[in-house]
Structure formats: structure tokens, C-alpha cells
Image 1: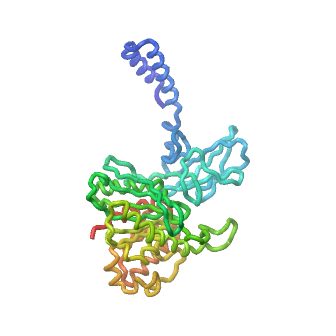
Image 2: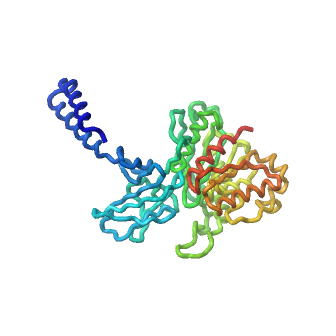
Image 3: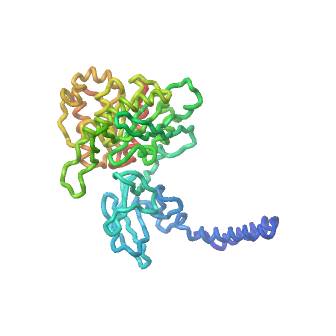
Length: 422
């Protein structure tokens, strides 16, 4: 906290040297503002704390909570004087304690670095924290908290040339509906109309949508920084929605009904519809609207979790369209630990390993080391099965991260430099 005597001395000196030059009314107004700022500064929890904690970067502007502690614990606080019971749901549920003013507080144990969705359960109803920005994840709008990773800034805005993220709507004949996409164009895209660019189609995960890579993933900052460092080729990046249904078909549920013990739904019908959207609607529209290189060697597809499975399922069925494939925490093996058979899996496109390796420039897979057995062994096991039959892969493990966005940001950082170099 500022020393009030030294602050007063500096203010007094400032008055004697500068306020005398002002008109009386302006001098009085300025002095009032200075005093008010001194009082607010001395009590501002956004600036000072006794425990070294800081507001999360994902907070709404001006909000002191949630706070991140030096040991990566998080404290969430909300005022709900009429509520009877509150819990913080951050994958794990934390009981919240209330004080005499109706302010409820919970502090977690140290959290894995990265981005985490969370909710506050008020008397049994999950709601967003009004002090946090909201993000489309978990199949709905949810709060999010960023747990910083020491020494990493590859996904932050830097003083480098910046590309643009453009929102675009187009009509897909497959679904007979308007669909929204986001398109990243690299720095300098509008300066030279003669230059054409390769394209990466980048998919989100289940429960998220086409906004995910832009908002939660910071993909434009990652790409700007990689391109500025000459670690990645300038490229267009297209982000589509991973859900679709053909005309006349019912929706595919993303999860079993609440309280059901049923297995997760079979995504094959939805993936089939998304494939047709890509091959019949999206790719032709992109190639006629943007200055793309339209040969297969200039086209890649990747995604996270569900989007990684889509990249493999769609990409391996359409190797005439894609030369680069990437699955971040999700790939062609799914999450069930299926036995891989190169003669039958993905239509047998991997039956001849030598021919496949010549056609696919990069087959990339990644996983976070803290994702848990379900994801870790599925992805690594699938990669090991591919290698055992002679399929060349590039494999990356994100140290200490879970099934969340920092794993996938790091994966994009590793994947993008491999693209379009042949």
C-alpha cells in the first residue's frame, strides 16, 4: 500500500509547481481527482493484495475475482445473500462458504495450467459467474478461468505484423442452412493480390463451436507470432462448426440425456454430414472466395478432441484433398481403445504403409500428459499401432497439461511449422 505521507508530499509538490498555473476551477477539479485516485489506489484489490494473488486474465473488466494465487490455486467469490447453498464446479465441486454479507467464497487446490471452464451452482442450478467472461463450451455458455503458465507467451499479442480473423456466413446445400465460419488471413494478405496461400482447416472440440479457436485458443496470436518468427508459412486458417445434419435427418445428440447411463452417441452420421459440408460446400466456397492454393499439397486439416477425430475420419477418406492431418487429444482411434487394423481401418487407406507415407506429408498426434488414462492411452496407443505397421507419425506430448485449451494451443504451435514445407 502506498505510504500516505510520501504520497501527500508528492501531491503537495505537484500542486506548488503546477496547479498554480491553472485556472482556479480547473485546479480544484484536478486536485479532487488526484485525492480520489489516491484513496482508490490505496484500497484497490486489483492492484494490491496481501497474499500475492492477482485477478484472472479472463475476468470481466474491473473485477477483482476470480483471483489466481502464486501456487496456482484459484479463489472465486460471488454475492448471493438469498441463496442457501453454493458450489464451485470446476470439473471438481468445491463447497462455497458464506459470510455475514451474503458473499460466498471457495478456493481450489493448485490447478493445472491452462484454460478451464467452470460454473457456480446456486441452489442446484448451474449459472455463469457474472465476474467472468463467458465462453461457449460444455454445450452452453460457461465461465472460464485462465491459469497462467510461467515463461510462456507464444499465444499472447506481441508487437509483430498481425493477420485478421474474418467472420463469414455461407449457405451449405448439404444442410440447406446458413453456416458461420471464421477465417484467419495472414499478415499482408490484402497488400498483394497476386499471392496465393495454403489453407489449414482447424476444428473445435465437442460442446464448443467455431468461435473456440478464435476466443479460447488465441489461434490468431499463435499464427501471427509463428509467422513473424519465420517458423510457419503464411497460411489461411478456416474454422467451421463441427456439427451438421443432412436435409431431413434428425439432430445427433452430443451426449446422453441427463441421468442416462447410455454410452456417448455414435457420431458417424454427424461426421458424415460434416464431411459433405466440407467437400461439397465449404472447400469450394473457400477456394473461390479467398486466394488459396487449391492443390492437395497446400491443404491441411486438424482439430482438437472431437475435431481431431473429424480431421482423421474426414481427411483419411479424402486424401485427394488433404496432405496434412493433425489430431490434438483426438485422432483416428477414437476414445474406446479400438484395435487398429490397417487393412480395414479408414477404408484400408493405410494397408500399404509405403504408399500412404508418400501421400501424407504429416500425420500429427498430440496429447497432454495430465489428460488421464482415457485420452492419453487412446491417442498414444493409436499412434503406437500406426508406427508398428510402418505408418510415419509426428507425436507431441504437452507436459503437465490436461484436456483443455493450453494443450491444444501448444499442439497448434508444434503442428503449424510442419505444414506446407514440401
